[in-house]
Image (tube, rainbow, N blue to C red):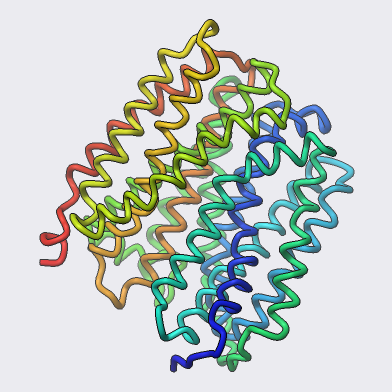
Length: 449
């Protein structure tokens, strides 16, 4: 039952400070990859696991944490998530080797994945007036922290070293934890039922995604055919098993019944595959080829982030007037144009030309983020919103995982302009698919019919 609280803005601030930790830590690592390659003697393919492990743990952890929030109470789980992130952020700077650092990244992802479902549960239950505005503010916390993560990371690494991108979490953790003690409502916990958690489905999901990553990363040399077998068998077993579960990790039955929603998931996954290829690829190129410092790389990446933040309100106004289809087509067109222009960038091109290309790609993200989410809600029933939102986040994580694998494959042996163009050429093909799916989706009125 929903109840109102006296100072809803404090609740939103508390939850926002916690929920920004996942997107912030997912994006700050982009500027640190080059430095981490040097510190731990890694290839780019090895370093790409710092990206993949974070999103894989987030994808597996977030649905589980939503159910645990119902069982133990959202306030308890929110504070437990902050403690997990704090523990991982303390241990990571002292990692003696790369596997320990990977484990810290996974723990960081699981802890930060706890914060979103528990925080959103409290907002939905205790803010009854202007709830839409509260959710919009939380979206700003999330999108802004992700967008400006590379710039923040660049300044931090320039001032100290890669360890700083973990320690910067503590101001947010401490403030959010102290506010949580006094601000978050003590919502009663539900009945503990371990059977509600689909452990087998989660393990099958992790196994086939891991098999896919290992297979893609091996395509340059000594192809791991066993990894392809693991992917195919794991995916088939996952699909078969999930259809038989009452509370599946991913609702495969619902996914296959609603084709429009399925197309939105595929489109969003593909958009994120492209977006994160540039999000992680540009900093690596600027540092390893153009010789930019982390600080200057962070400044250049502001172009990418800033235009996305600026164009998001325009996309919102278009959605209010015309629905999601028109801004989706605009966003897909910007993405296709920016990727095509990237193929015109050469060694003699001035930096300002690359920044113009990055601004166009940033504008596409400003349109695509809000438009795909709206398109999803236009094509699902209101009672399906919760499960649809979970699948929406999962599609984001899978796109990010695939982007890190693609970058690991193309940048592993040598990083130069030719390899950046190769990534752009592959992404161009995906951009055509994104534009096709945007055109194919029904308009707002047809979706509601």
